[in-house]
Amino acid sequence: MKKPLQIAIDGPAASGKSTVGKKIAENLNYLFFDTGLMYRVATYAVLEQQCPLDDEGKLADIISLADIQLQNNSQTGETDVLLDGKAITDLLHLPQVDANVSLIAAIPAVRKLLTAQQRKIALQGKIVIAGRDIGTVVLPEAPLKIFLLASAEKRAERRYLENLRNGIPSDYDEILYNIKQRDQIDSNRNVAPLKPAEDAILIDTDSLTQNQVADKIMSLIDQ
Ligand code: DC
Image (tube, rainbow, N blue to C red):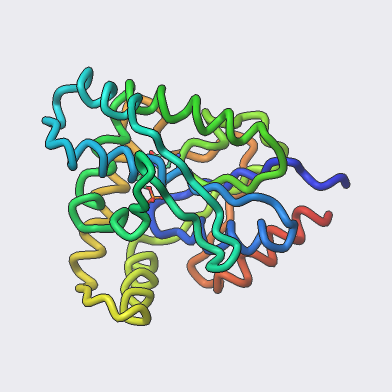
């Protein structure tokens, strides 16, 4: 089979989309694009300007005026994020961003703006693109759509261990609570809720390592 030009990877918070997506992109020499980062930059911009979260019009104005740039850093393998020319990558996982990003991402005007930008980037070439609504809304025509499943407990455990490895103090129960809250908001919003596309391939990752998940997807691509 010809390699799919676009590979959509959706799934809930901390299901491994970025780690797995990056591995696949590296194997195929494709671009990796984590659309969650866009919602995080938008949230950061809104919080920085102290905009009330219920003022949808003002939120959309702030986000539409924001110059958001994502640059793949070939040295670190990470995506560097710039907001109005300022590097803010390290600020995108701050607790206040984590606590508000699902609320901002549920606002229809915000989604409209960011979905259009994501689609434009996705159509530029070979890409592995990760998010919540890639297979259903951003790129429903993607030839390969993956949806990663994992229990909230397993995802919290992975995030907790990752934090420990990175020397970030963290609390398992707090992570679990936060993940469940985000699942609830992401799955129940009116616009583009988190759900698998009808033709997505579901992969239950609870008993798999991230390398095994990546291998599984690579074998689907090679089939
Ligand atoms: O993948 P992440 O945890 O960095 O995503 C942050 C938030 O952005 C998440 O709570 C849901 C939202 N999101 C979304 O609604 N649609 C996407 N395509 C990507 C992320």
